[in-house]
Length: 162
Image 1 (spheres, one colour):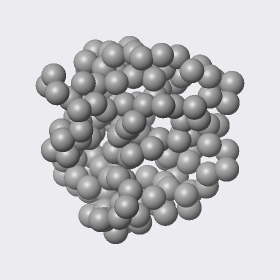
Image 2: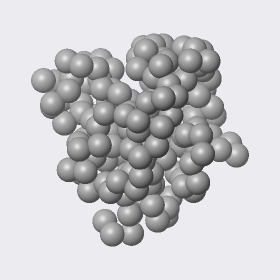
Image 3: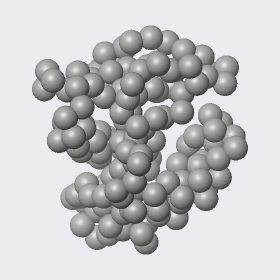
């Protein structure tokens, strides 16, 4: 596996289309009204910081400039009925052939580090499939919730304990 770095996706607009297609494909079952353009618009918003919203997107980029994965730090992850204040780790996606090489862990850690830099006490996420993976990284299950008929786990990471 090639070595990689985790940087702001805003600095790599040549990878926005691929990241948007991945994200759309991964979450269209949860956000059926989203399109590839929805994600491109989010990347543009993140690149235009500062705005009145917290939206930061990080990318794992190989040393030969291949996009390996993405993760987002966002103020509101659009989970209906959620009363957690945020911010949220969201939209973590690693292309299948880049999994099991630490790519996802590095992306999540970059978002965690940034939330700590911004002095947030807690970071939240929700996941459909990866509860156990996040538990191994120190996240705690808060509750289960149904979202579009699919069971999700809402989790938190206490940043003040890191």
